[in-house]
Image 1 (cartoon, rainbow, N blue to C red):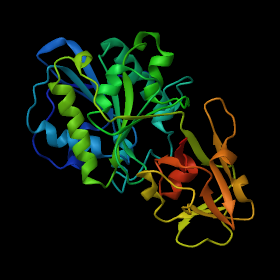
Image 2 (image 1 turned 90 degrees about the vertical axis):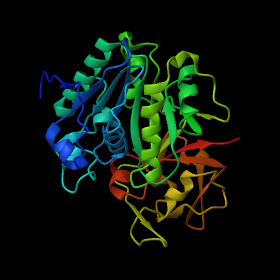
Image 3 (image 1 turned 120 degrees about the vertical axis):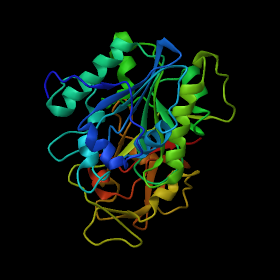
Length: 342
């Protein structure tokens, strides 16, 4: 895939094929470029960076049937088509022989995902877009929320029309939304991730379609007024298993497992998690099986949690995000993100 050049489809199909057939016809990653009333300007949505996050693709498939005419050019990337089509469809974050694409947007650009990330960066730098929104599904069920690396009026105005929370993170993982920090030609470009909800939630597709409509219909993003009610949370902590630790999900503690998380822990993706709530059960290693480093690499797990009679509790009220019940994602990525509340 070295030296990959992504195809740009300027007449996206609206032939009402099933989504799977639609993706098979693409055969690989591709841009859909919708010409706009003002083709001097461009806005970008990237989606399907993870093959098990289909809402952005499903919403695009539905929306294109209306033959929309955007105010500006609108480029939409369908990225990990190969992962999405791996059997069973829309269940693989990436193929077993490749890496997580959304960890490849920094050097070294190795392997197929690294080369694909390099090609995406090249296109974005060439187009100098007014904004880039990276559209995802959350790992577990929960409401839509947005993530950015810093606060910007345009980002907050857009987020406030799509969700209720914006998380400003200082973690650097090699994700697409970090590009303005590392690529001078994209410095200042409003970029954020929109987590539109769980992959199986019908509302997630609606949020994704709302994003396409908003970018297509808004004449001037810079003139968007601030949306009231957006909650901005800063510096989330990424809660992970320590190397070699095991995890399970159940309604009772599993013998021989380091941490058994409650089988419906994704319910904590909504609202505030109280210190009285049982998040799960800890094995003999206790909290030593967990880690929660901040953006500067400091370990904070003892500030977030405590063990009480073998049960895992928050030490203080927390906002949890991206809590998953998928043990594969929990092992390969993280258990959830947490933001301590005062």
